[in-house]
Image (cartoon, rainbow, N blue to C red):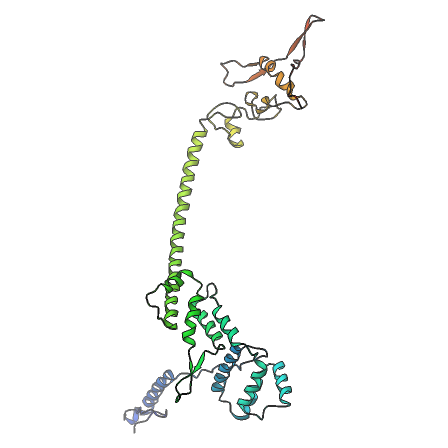
Length: 379
């Protein structure tokens, strides 16, 4: 049986000349296996997205117009539109108010005009004329925004410079062409508008003072990248140091707290006057350890402390003049005795005060009389 060639156009693959008895099945298998190489090798066609038509509005700037011209050129190149269709597509780039103004200005439709004539008509209404000097002053006053990459700032400068007309006619008589010196001008506003003062200082102090615009961009770009890397590295170190500080502070706090508890147990309790359970232990600890817990003080009529440590015994009693409290303090002290020294709890016991009545010649239960007190004189 003769050899069988690959059915794919342009392929030179041919099967071997095999025996007729087994040729049919083997040839079919060989051709099937071979066609898989064409399937895997072929790339599926990817459908490209439709190119968006640029849009232009009225009262724009010269920079906006330059951007529109660039987008229109790309659109024409992508769509391959020609002839009358190109004129229609160009007019469709105008928004509705601008399209209406162009039609009114031309006195009718512009579809029969050339592309250059339509562009000139659009530019008259879409671009507000600007003074070149004002545009140049605005260029030199531009500043880099915070966190704005230097390349983005350079792009903004280039957009503003496009309307500044940094061109000059060649002085040579035989040339007559315009020379564009925008890059030489852009270097100075770029250096002046750099946001980082440290990078600006390094740039001005560099030994190479004849850098081109691209050299300045690369210099600042490298400095910005270094600062970002150093900032991230510093953040990592600060995080580690903060973690260590927190651990050390926690350990120091626990140690101080433990020492404070040990020292507190050696102090006298302010509720019972004894030692061993802290100066001001919480209620749950005093319920089991403090003997004064549950006792009602007779001086202030409050619970959980003894009269000997009552804070109200040295304070003036309500409804009694301050002078009377001060004058009777000596008598109150004389009429107060403490419990037996053998007692574990030191308590103060108040005795009833008596005065001798000369008329009846008897002692009567009565409070002490206030003593004379000389107050300050008022002028």
